Image (cartoon, rainbow, N blue to C red; front, side):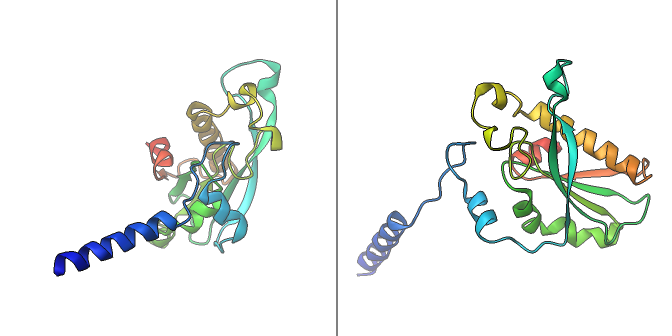
Length: 186
């Protein structure tokens, strides 16, 4: 009798999962991710100010198109920061940076102890950091600029500029990330 009730519960759960709505996988320009759906329907309340950094399209070639500028979104919280203290940077991954900032509380939890500046940088081609606007996913020519080398260079340029503008070149930078963003931070 116990085995049949277990089997019934198992089948009921299996049936429930089969009927549940499955979120789509994110492929740029093809399907919408669950991260994007959450970001558009409910704007999370986060203790950060949004800023936009003028970023070059291509950090590695010297062709005229390389110097095209797009605006890369980043979020900043200086509530606990003291000049010279560490800068905690979250390297964004495949999605809107607001979602990651709202769901990465660890950095916010430890910032007061270290008097850290908190920065969340959005990955190019995601969220609002679209180099070619609504046409960013339309061709192989534009998608050629969507790669980890360009994104790492974006992060480096933005961090150096931020340190310079804050007159805090000696501040150590500690990078954080999860999944692909974690690989980028390493």
